[in-house]
Length: 257
Ligand SMILES: Nc1ncnc2c1ncn2[C@@H]1O[C@H](COP(=O)(O)OP(=O)(O)OP(=O)(O)O)[C@@H](O)[C@H]1O
Image (cartoon, rainbow, N blue to C red; front, side, top):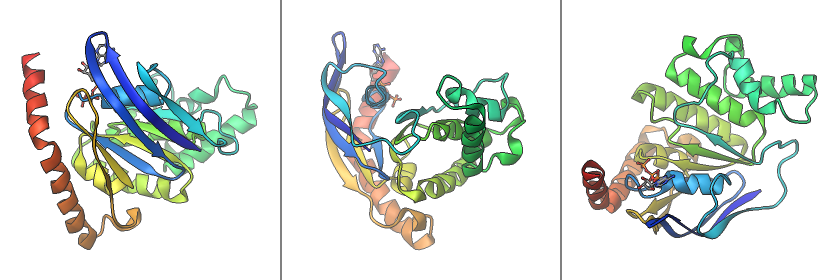
């Protein structure tokens, strides 16, 4: 199943936030969205997920959802958004509660998501007993439990320290290896973008418009290798030079707001 952003524009009253943004995410593709603060990245994700109706253009799905998909488009949030009173397994089961799944089917879907995220041994644990990295694994497991065709990720690693981020990036690479799920990955972090994405959509300062779409070379699984890292660093620097001036302007604007 493909997700298509078709000429999406949006304004909040007089504030124009997005202008004519178009791209497609195919099955198994990861598209990162980067750009200066306030350029409309989260707004775009809300539109792609159907939470917000755009002022212009539309978000569309094309093709059939994968077998057993209960929610073709699913979010993973920066702050994990876990239920503190529920165990890991109950958190992962939560989006399955009001579906047509029988109890055994639900248990199997939870088990599968826990396996894929390395959480089997933590199923009875509560979020407050977990590190930030493990909490975000629960957030991802909950997203996977509904078998999405498209995962929308809003700064999923930004609340984590750099070592944990590195480990979760490695986990993502493994998760994405089966090549069926498309991902839109919003991030401020250009290192994450070049490590994980097939393509990077660079937005301008608000109103966000597409400045450039960059293809990332090399297989995702080998991008952590020393040789690939230096090549990716060049790309990261190229991206940074593209957004640096606008990022500084956006930062000043935020401080004066
Ligand atoms: N519900 C809303 N009503 C009015 N203005 C909004 C609303 N949501 C976002 N905005 C404004 O729209 C602009 C874009 O916000 P958005 O959160 O999409 O940007 P962003 O690129 O994700 O920002 P950041 O990089 O800082 O997370 C900002 O100026 C924000 O203040």
